[in-house]
Image (tube, rainbow, N blue to C red; front, side, top):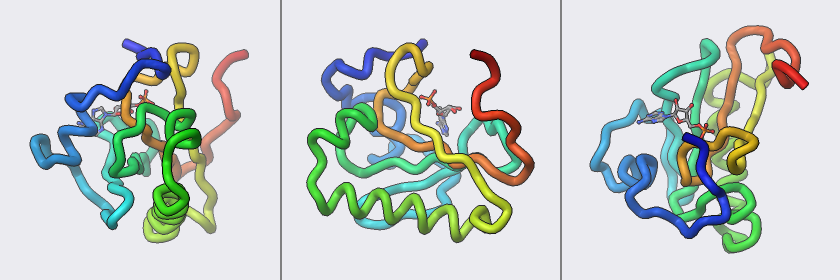
Length: 126
Ligand code: AMP
């Protein structure tokens, strides 16, 4: 069920629970600012989610409220994960869903990294 990205942060969302260690994940990277793990329902041979450790609902919320250190740390972590996964030379797609029309389901900012095959057109339909 897509979420309303303008609502306040829900500390019981599933990614918050993963950050607290209450739910397991297939972790690929972690540092002070970010955690990366494999998507539970992969839509490409490589499908990794990168999330900031702070409580942010969406890219919109993050870009408005995060500190410079949080923004730099998260953006650098996304790049680090992509390089470590070997995605840069073949190419990859970076995607963040924000709100209902994009189909955002988890109300904690996450970017999707897709790769491992030619990914086709950017959107399936217009
Ligand atoms: P979005 O639609 O952009 O909010 O994407 C949410 C993503 O989180 C989906 O691709 C789900 O498959 C993924 N997801 C949901 N729960 C988990 C989980 N426990 N571990 C890993 N990925 C998850």
